[in-house]
Length: 194
Image (tube, rainbow, N blue to C red; front, side, top):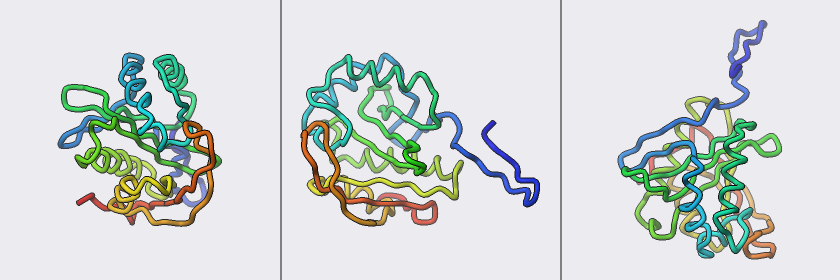
């Protein structure tokens, strides 16, 4: 049951956003992951230039790592969305994830390096976040970027994320603590990327 009704106020409270959707944009299709995506995920995250910008991705990263991750996603035990970012011909090029961690919703994303600089990350993240806020309008999304990733910070700023602080977090691929710029977004602040 995705919605609860309070007897006193008749307010519908949605504890989670429901199942992962399929979302079409002008250039992309976001869909739930499949086991067949393992090779493409391994190729993308096996590139240290991608993995180094993500906190929880080990290096090296191989196809078994991708299969292990995909099997956890397929169990569908959590309210999280892990959407494959694909081109019109269903080529897997990245991921947008929205997950509940420690009682807060977090959004993360990555793209295969070949697709950087084309506005695809902004397009994909906007589509996923916009759909999430349609289902969860009162939610606050948290995110962030490593301080040495100005491209990702620009994506978030274009979408309306606000910087809330800076911390040090452990980056598995780098095997060290890294400066992390923390951000947040509400439905009211969401903007279409220019």
